[in-house]
Image (cartoon, rainbow, N blue to C red; front, top):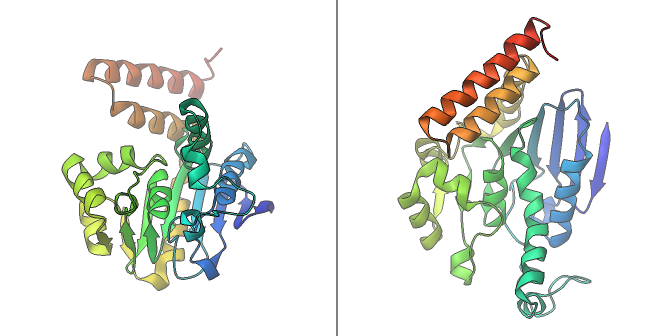
Length: 259
């Protein structure tokens, strides 16, 4: 069932599995401001039955980043240019960028596990979109790169936090400051990719992982994801307390002792 199809983003739902597909293959799935609005709408469109959201792309590239028209004086038709954005006051510009970030933020909500199925180029905004997901299954032709600094910009779509969490501060800084490419073997070695497979096997490997993710009871997975996310910032005793509270909820739910 298709629940959304707009601006190069299509969302289909099959029971507990939603697939969000970028389909501007002729543009290597380059992103526009409209793409980001559609991706934000994708998150809002998911039925409550969805447990796993797969992010995929048509064509040989996952996403080549921000559409180059953004860097022209005219920008995108009907959209503010970079020059116009720069002239906004701080509060207004902050609000605009926060709206763009919504496209990248919902993938980590606790009730859904998100899986990026990545092939070919994942550059700039494409890299940040892959980083937005909980897990990344990659083809052996994948190429990640954070090119924002070479354009005089910064990664501002939520990508800095997961990148540092995955590869550490020093490597994240080196990747971002140099803008170099990270290919499949390195991506798997440093933790950017959960799994690398031959390109021809990417869809099958993604399907296998999704099947494993929906096998356990939903509430146990939701609670576990929440615990793991909180573990990053919590001290040991706080995290142990959170584990105890979560286990108490699970035991009472399993035994029908909840409120």
